[in-house]
Length: 487
Image (cartoon, rainbow, N blue to C red; front, side, top):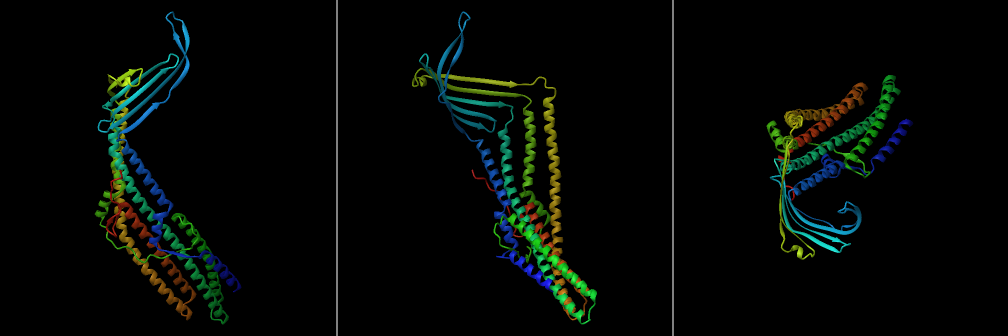
């Protein structure tokens, strides 16, 4: 008996140290904390913000850009080789100031892939050795750079980047639903450890009581030595179970805290969810919501466009023609004021081309590779579509089974608990032996664990369904509503 007293004292010290400042959470509380403060939620928010600024960068590519460029001042002092009329080479020193300033407004042309710019520039030259000053000014210059039959990346970006941004918005909602799923899994991991600890404590106290009863019966000769030893062995195993259950509970607590981002030392106590949402899930509705909301379907559309983009880019690389045209007003003078008087026309027109005559099939290979990649992308997307639809159909059909299993598990838990109470009362009156009582105890414990496991399976499947469809069938509302990004 002294050993039992010492064990209980040690156990109470361990449990009291673990159970200081206990806080109680429900499944809803844990999910809310995971979505609001967990490291996973912060990572999801950061990825969403990063994608937003990438989208803003894409939008800025279509806006005019005003830039000021210059070299103020440009100083040069060196020796210059100069060949005289008689062929003699002499080295002359020079000291010059050469500065420039240009103000330019550039407007990309999304519909053609060209660039239209308006510039105003001034160049200043001063030969310090000869005391010679010159100003060269361009009051205004209008320039067009336009590829002919070239690849227009601005046009293709306009088709893919809004889809990529929309995809990121939906992916964020899916990540949050995945966080809810993971939080549910961690919740039930801890809840299972908590219930196992409670079962182990109950069994220890119960087996200690039974041991005392059997000991008394043995002393008066109403039970055998082997039954007393059997009960003592059960008591020793109960002590081991309590120690292991306490370790598992502490480990689960650390894992749950790490996932939720909790830094306090309060002991967590979880309440068993007392109900599940009631809703029906028509398979066709689930498929419609998935196709309408899921980020993967946006990604499929984007991937098809990107595959066509690669084909268009390969086609544009077969030959290249570039047109450059400009018109400006240019003048030069020794005085800055005179440099803007009576400017002359400044005109330019260039057409550059690159046409391969013999490339040993390079362009054809590039084109066929792009076409093959496009076909492969389409095949992969078609297969993924079938897999995703099958995943949703399987999950919807599984819900009915999970709901039935949960109802059966709950009823089994109640029946097993009642059966154990009856068996315990009959044991105390001597109508049931210790073997039948242990069977009832084992069935009671297993029924409780099965009920918690069924709850876990249901809630994880529930959040999987929300993640796959971005639709809450319980509240009958969309989890994501498309919004125009802030300009």
